[in-house]
Figure 1: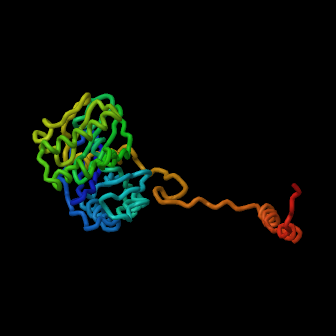
Figure 2: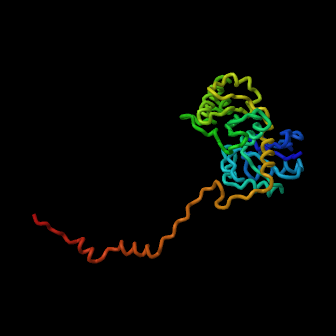
Figure 3: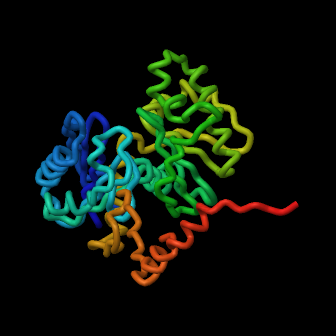
Length: 299
C-alpha cells in the first residue's frame, strides 16, 4: 500500500490527510488549519510545515495550489498574494519540510482524483472537470491523461469573464436563484462544449453537495453532466496521486525563472560598424558649402 500525504491549499483553509493512492481512500480524518490572511508564501509555507509535522508520514508530499503550476513554479495568483508569481514553490516547501514536495494546480488535482476514483472513473475520451467556488477551476482529461493548467475559468463569453459571472461566488453576490445561476452555467458549458466536445462534464466545488438544486436547470446539446463524487476530498487525493506519480525530485529546466518577465539581452554592435556609421553621419565641410549654395536652373 502506497500512502502519501496530500495537502489542499484553499481560500479559507489548508487541509491534509494521508491517502492510499491505490484506492483513493483517506487513511485518517482530515486535519485543517485556517489559511493565513493574505496567503503570503512564507505564511502558507509555515502552515504546510505544520501539517507535515502533524502527520509525521515519511516520503513525498503532494500540495495543491490555486493557480498555474509549471515545473514546480507558481505562475499566477488570482486569489492569493502576488508574491507567488514566479516562485519556485516546490523548493520553498521542500526546504521547509525536509520532504520532497510536489505542487499541482488545485483543479487539476481534483480532475485527477475524479477521473481515477470518482465520477470519471472508466470514462473514455474527453472529460472536463470544473470546480465552482470563488472562481472556476478546470481540469481537462483525455483518456485518463491530464492536460494541465487549462485555466478555462478565465475565458470570456463576449463581454463576460466566465468565473466572475458564473462562479458560485457570482451566484451569491448577484443573489441568483438556482435556475438563474443554471442559465449562466449553461451558457458557459455550451461554450466549452463548442470548443472541446467533451464526452462528460464533472461539476465539482461546493455546489457538488447539492446537485438537485442546479442539475435540472443545465441545458447542453451533446455532453453529459454529472456532479463530482469526491467533493472536498478530491484535492487531497489528487495531490497525493501526483506526488506518487512524480516520485523523487525532478530536474528543473535551466534558464530564467519560469513566469518572471525577462528582458532580452541587447546585442552588442560591431565596433567597426559603429565607427563607419559615425563617419557616414558626419557631414563634410564641402557638403556644408554645397548645401548652403543656391542653384539656378535655365528654362
